[in-house]
Amino acid sequence: MSTNNTMLAGLETHIEKFFSLLRIRGFLIVVCVLLFLTAWNRGIALIYVLLFFLLATLIVCLVVAQLITRKVLVQRFFPPVAYEDKPFTIRYELENQGRFACHLLEVTDSLPFQVETSRNDMLLIETLAGARSIARTVIADWRGVHKPGDIQLASAWPFGLFRSEKTIIADGSAILVYPSTFTLDRLPFEGASNFWHDGSITDHRKGGQDIFIGIREYRRGDNRKNIHWALSAKHSELMVKEYESISRTEICILLDLHTAENPGNGKYAPLEYAIKIAASVAAFALREGYFVSLYGAGKKELVIEAGSGMAWMEKISYALALVQADGHEAYASFVNRELNLHGNHRIFLLFDHRGNSLQPTALGLADDQVMLVRFDPRTFMQMLPEKNRPAKDGSLMIRCGDNLEEKVRSWTTR
Image (cartoon, rainbow, N blue to C red):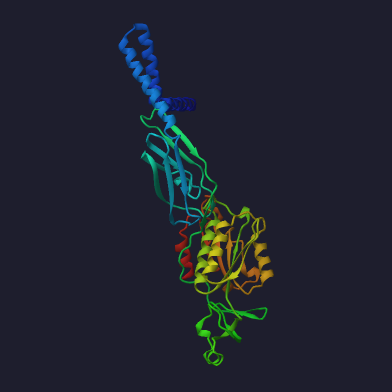
């Protein structure tokens, strides 16, 4: 029975191949051969005339197909920076330098920042005579630096008997796609505690406390609330009170860049999820006045020292767009190294790609110092999630396919 099924499957395969090869062009060529043989044997002039028209049609289609895309030039323009999951515009400048118009021109672009299912989208231009500009809206599905590929031109006009193709080599320019962020209302830690480090005190309130250190001349950009009006009147020029910050809250983001700890494919990997969460937490924290730093042990050490203000978000977003899982240092070792290097006076955003391997208390971190995101690695390897894995320590468990915004917002408002 199995032998018969194998033979039947093989026969179906051969039949499918035969019909895939049976196109109208091949059919017309076979008809031309039959007409020629018939006319040769019978000597019927009408058959010769019919044969002549068929051959002329094939030759004209072949010549037109070879010439139709030869004189077409294409230039592609896109912004240097885009944002993941947000639309932007790509513009194509086409010019037909030939004497005759091109019809049914197919323009196929290769855009590596889109997932496989949506790549190589084709534009169909009915007629191209002279110059023409076409704008196309696309969405970047994946953060990183991407170099769009070659552009393929093709046309099967007039009857689809022959196909003309041409490749426009890419100029090598790249587009930088920043990671997407989602809106948060708060951060997932409670209370306040004091940690002493080099004479400075840190608490969980945004910003910090300031100490008065002196008077100086007013400089452009100084806060007008700090102007000392009495001394300004006495010296006939603006004088301001100068302060030094003696406390601040710093949120330190530590990414796991170990190659072996990043299962999954493409954008569906723990690091990609972690980057979205890190970018969203950083955006909220900077907007609220916190200081934010970013570190990772990759092939090239990722070091973004603490900074504040929304201008710092640009630096963090740029680093997150470029980072890759190409490191070889274990994450627990990396976290220990950072704690020993910088002390434990910060609030840490940590990521556990193994699920339940990282225990902050074993690292000497208090509960109100840590925001811990865990990932279920089985789901990123397309396996069923393990049962009985509740996050009992206040951490957040993420599985492949989860709605990040919904889960993180629920976690931060618990």
